[in-house]
Length: 190
Image (cartoon, rainbow, N blue to C red; front, side, top):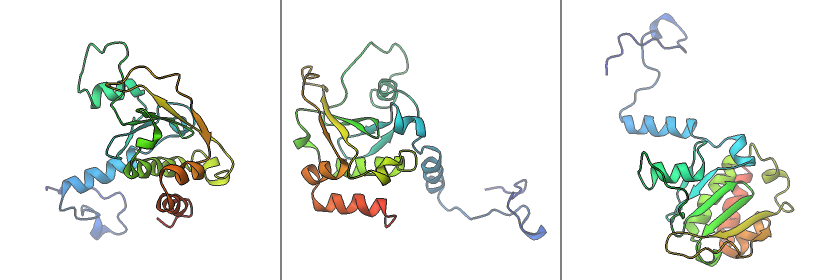
């Protein structure tokens, strides 16, 4: 890597000018670090709409400000143009409208996996600085947990949604480890 024209904006003395701050052996590590910083959830997404997805493997997928359909179209279906009207979400995925409205694409939340619960906890962790209720009203603020249609499934929008606190949800679907993980995140221990 040629750094002859690189100017270190954080140089503390003349000797450091033109030197790299930190030597990076693997460009992929640098790219991942930058993505983590840039692609953090936002205030609008956490409190309003189109926050992201938790896929069937438990990966938290921030829509980066795009709406849910556009994100799926570009990143899951890999299409560039001629997007059709509506289409169902992938089976077993969780649609996160905002930090207090999440929807499972399937027949029941009983099908959610431990990895997906961990993905939700990562989302709540990212939103905790924008949605202060996650830290201050954890035991009282109700979150909407719904069911929506997905690939291979008939329309089920009439399925009843449940309102419960995050700890109530975690107790039912995640167990003790998930509750510990969530509170460890809230306390900054993770």
